[in-house]
Length: 387
Image 1: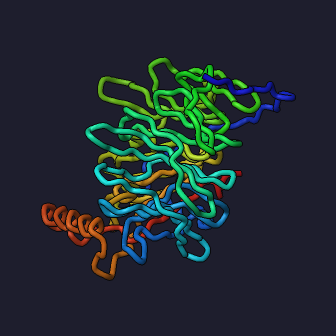
Image 2 (image 1 turned 180 degrees about the vertical axis):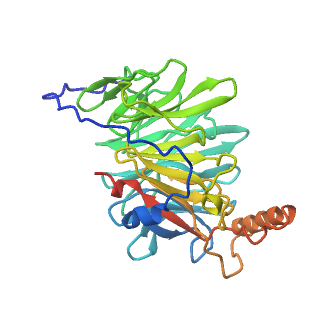
């Protein structure tokens, strides 16, 4: 056990008045995010140019670079890549070691801070699943295994933060752990049981939020029957309103500015940068939006601007990671573009995806022209929008 020094704030900060702008009552063909926030949206490759292996955005490295993983075929090493958004060029940073006799999964959580990148992945060996925490200098170098956590569940991924000389992380069941970046034992931070990382330095659960650096505390006031995820500015949650209906709502942590979203909002993918709400939508019967019906939208809680992230029913649906559903790596969101491949796949993983797309098209007659393996992603960086 270890304690984290929490200092009281030097002086109280003036409260900031935030309203919940009216959310659109009707689902419509909202303008695309590329039109609403053109300076924050770019195209990035979905496959590496030299090996044709899948590329997945993981985190923002700095003002011009994004951290991506080049996912190797089974038995191959994966590579971390620094992709320069201005130059359109990916530079390998280093490889992630691979050991025979075990199944090594893709990176599912990553953070880049203080000249360090850190990430988490799961591995399976002899029927057991473990989680691994790794680190590497942000300018590239050797990958170092910091810690292994046995008995984890695939899909129950931790949230990470780097501060000072430690990597901090919390799994969904809560409790803040830390491990030195130079290596050492994993230690639980005393008094954090059941709490999860929000936006560093905020930690919280369904009842409270705590700033780990200043000691500021916020009491969360939400309906007892709601499933709510709060940060210091906004909360998003779901609540059962009838035997057949679950609704999404937003509110301030203190319970004010509460607003129930329309029934066509079916699921909150996440709250990004404590301001931008990523939502899954389903068109109501008789929707007038036609081919422009969005399958996901981004809602700016500060201004009320609503923009379409991607459409599922229009002319450009796709298969694959970041395709049917968006990929989320807060503050990044990525989804497939309509760009098509022009050359045969070089890697086994891409060949398998092409085969699965072809099989899908064969079993859904008449839509084969609508589906394709994503060749590029749109990438929205919500940190470039925050004001």
